[in-house]
Amino acid sequence: MRLGLLVCDHVHPDLRSIAGDYNDMFAELFSAFGDLDLVEYDLTESRFPSSVRECDAWITTGSKRSVYENEGWIHGLADLVREFARSDVPFVGVCFGHQMMAHALGGEVRRSPNGWGVGSKVVHVPRSEPWMEVEGWRGGSFRVLNSHADQVDKLPRGAEVLGSNEHCPVSVMRLGPRMLGIQGHPEFVPAYSRRLMEVRRGRLIPETVVDAGLASLDDPPDQALLARWIVGFVVQALEVHAS
Figure (cartoon, rainbow, N blue to C red):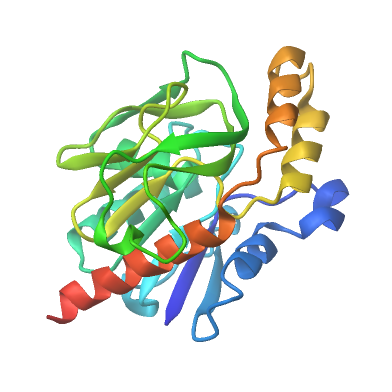
């Protein structure tokens, strides 16, 4: 399976010794899936696919940018997401991409009234979907690393919330059988999350929020589970199309 990685940002060079750039983090996230070929498109350099069918499915990285900024490549991603919505090609939006799903398709994104969401957070899943039913998951909730100031405030028409918490009510959403949004960062590792919070302490993120975020890292994220969910969602979406 060819999975197109839409790169929407890069790790600061000073932090790349921890886990590499974002493409490296996603490659590691999916490393257990030997038949998955990750193909990179650096949108920040205006390297867009010529067709949504260049890959079997698509996924985004996160970004420090906001989906409502007036930037050429950001508008280009919005157009691409609308094209995904009109097609039968699966799309998974991570963080920035999750927000872009809402922004591009009629929902709304704004600064979170709860401030920055950082560290390891529990996301509650009231009802599991078939692609979530994997060995080792007992249901009810999962943990994921976060780093976001914006969040989805209004769902696009037809979208359904699959996961939420007090800080971010729309933590996971699905739009139809082929579009999935995840506000958290399945690809982040705790060491990178820690360093990112420390770098932003007192400058972008209040010190008390950083302290709480660092303390939350004692509870590890469910990285392997989320990787299996993403692949499972994509495989199911492809099977629905094939049938």
